[in-house]
Every structure is written in structure tokens, then in C-alpha cells.
Image (cartoon, rainbow, N blue to C red; front, side, top):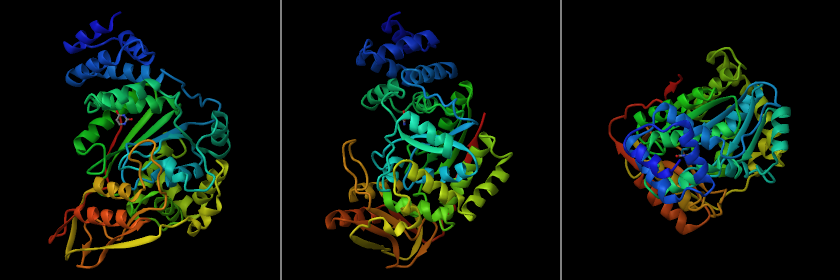
Length: 435
Ligand code: URA
């Protein structure tokens, strides 16, 4: 088999076989197929597409390019959750303890934040001592005993995807549904869960800016999951404004804790209940989504989810007293209110730019090597559809550097649009994709 012939085949619009895709993925991962040939192949895929079978074969080849986690030693149905990323997305911090408190087994691999979206690991490291750099044995033990563990994505997990994504990123071939879906799903499948609930975000703060693209991506991923024999559901959710009120690592952790105390923002709680209910049903911990929602609400009322969070933090070396006394978390030194420049309704919040404000403050990573300031960020007091009077505070910026805080304030105001009329409400949950 020659890579040259496979490039011609795809360029001419023909489908590749399982053997051909495996040859290509394995050869590329081992350095036998050079970057320039793989780049040509990715461009051919970009223009000619891949059918459902090819997309599955590509996913499975990337999944098996490295270690595939074996969760079979843990009793019950293991469920994973994945978000395509957004601003203020602290969902895992509240959702996973809630579902684990209902008896679900959640074994999750998470990443760090890059660019305008934050990462779960960075947020969790707000707890002094907490680490996700744990051995696979400890990870499995924690899931078995507590129903919950989060581990950093290891280098051994789907290495073909890592190499291919880096190439796509510099050859203008990221934007193809089959390639995106197979990239995400190869990592999810390698993480070993039996069922996967995907939160596909859409809007100005999301990877998928257009709603129809988010649905297409959701469908592609659900099809891959089903074809790979895993129960997979995609929830399409709004990211046209930040989720909840807080953006920034410690600020988001505190908001997640408040939510587990029943004092969280409504939109955030709704998203947790929606995703959580599908997780419980997929994991056979609840008979239907209505019952599941009631069970999840109960974990907030009886504080079982909060206790689960504390147990989880403790089990990974963190100081769990912060769960009960969040005022112990360090704070930024500058608090800068952003006053509204006019009377009116908040019509639009350019969500990606809000993520960039947090980045400017030092709360995000510009490159993989950047250090982040866990204390900075911003907390919204008014959101889309709210009426504000001139001078009224829209958000409070938490900063540690005067110049950065001033820049963030300027950029924040440029990211907000006003109207005289109340804007139409946008639903948080846009749809559920199942096959
Ligand atoms: N995220 C991924 O993991 N892969 C893609 O291709 C795009 C976004």
C-alpha cells in the first residue's frame, strides 16, 4: 500500500477502506508517512468529505493508536461527559459530584484551558494540593470507591489525534465535521466509558459559532459513538453569552460550590440538570429524565453533591475545607466595576471577547506554557435581556494589575451591545441529538 495512491483515491472522491485508513493513521503516528503527504490527504478530505464508515474507521484507528483505558474492573455502567468548550463553563465541577451522588460512576479525563475557554483541571487546581496527575491505578480506585475521579489526559491517549490535530491546525484543515468529530470521539472512546454525554456548545463563545453546525457535529459524534457500540447523546446548548455569572478559575469554582448549596445561577443549574439527567439515564441510574432531574435536585437539597465534591477533592490530594469555606480561596487585589454607558437592554454579549478579557487579566493561557492567575476574572451582575440604567454595574472585574484591568474593562464594554427593545430570549438548551 502506498500513501500516494490513497491521496489520489480521496482526491478523486472515492471512499477509503478500513485497512487503508489504519495504514495511514499508523504510518503517520510512527513517522513513516511524512507531514506533507498527510497534509495533502487532510486537504483532500476537507474537499471530498468522509462517509459514515470512513469516519468511524478513522476514529477507531486514532483511538487504538495509543493506550485504551480498561474500566471493566469497575462495576456498573461508566459514563463520561464532554464539553466542546465555552466561557464560564464550570459544568463538570458541579455536575460530576451531582451524578456521582446519585450512584453513577464517572471516570473522566480532562484538559487544561487554552485560548478564551478555561479548562476543568486549572479550575480544580484552585484547591490547594489537588492534582490530576495520578496513576491509572489510583484513578480506577477512586472511581470504584467514590464513583468519581478526574485525570489529566495522558500522552498515551490517542497520540495519532494529537499529531494530526497539530498538523490540521497549521494547514487550514480543522474545519471539517468528520475530522472534528473523529478527533473528539477518538479521545473519548480511548478513555474507556460505556456511555458518553456530549455538551456541544454554539454561539459567539463556542467553537461552533452557527447552530446548524453544532447540530451537525452533534449528529456526527453520536453516530460514531453508536457505531462504536457506546450509548451517546449530544445536548446542544447556548454559548452566545457566558454560562452563569462567573468567568475565571477560582470565581467559577466558587460559583460551582454555590450551585451545590442551591444558590447558583439558574442557567448553570439548568444545564447541569439537563446533562446530568441524560447521564443518569444512560448509566441506568434513573428510569427516565424527569425522575433523574428530581434525583439530581435532591442531591443539592440534601447536600450530598457538596459532600461528594469534598470527598473527590480529598481523594486527589486537595484541601476539602475550601468546599465548606469558599471564602478561604485567595482573592484578586483590584475590584473594578464596569458601569453601563447608557440606559437600555443588554442585547448581545460577544462571548469570545469576554473570554479574552479573562485572558488579558492573566486568567487564561495564551500558549501551553503560560502560567495562569487563578484569582482573576469577572462576575456578571446583568446578562442578556436585562435592563440597565446608565452607570449601573454590569460586571465586576477581579484583577491584580492596573493596566491589565483597564484593558479588560475597555474590551468588556466593546463586547456589549444595547437596545431599546427587550431582545428575544434565546433558549439555553437548543436540542438533544440521539440516534
Ligand atoms: N477539538 C478537538 O479535540 N478536535 C478538533 O478537531 C477540534 C476541536
